[in-house]
Figure 1 (spheres, rainbow, N blue to C red):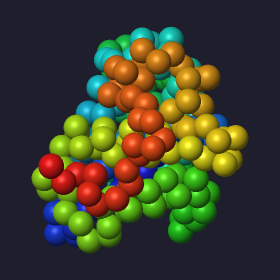
Figure 2: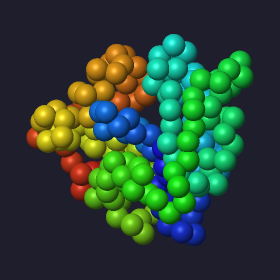
Figure 3: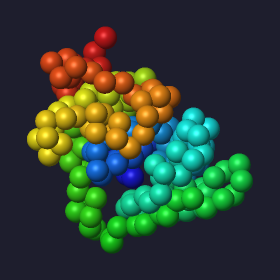
Length: 182
């Protein structure tokens, strides 16, 4: 788990969650880089995903030491019951290499929104569009399959649909700035 920041003088950023085995990434728009916004996303996830599946998908989370992740209980617990279901671990300080696969996926975001881009006018539908294009990109490391296809081994497609995910044919994947031009 990590965040991707827009312009420094703006609060908007993205929360990203990556499953290492499939390289599948979720992207959520945060209005500010705060624990409250991260908690809001986990509440959404817990409401969308049946509890037994949520427990399977979110057993362990590795993140950096960003201040937005310091409310550990709101990440590790089911909000409605207080049950601990997730184990949150933090990378060593200044060791982004410990989550290198996620950093690589962030490069795909930067193909579409280069560093210094504003995220102010980006909404969750735009995040879903970015996410779906990245997750539909075939990877040599997945034997020519996409992260979306690989994620289907970890959960049913109806869960992905609930999260706003869908597959894009490989010849229609767009990882350029033009993706968000309407």
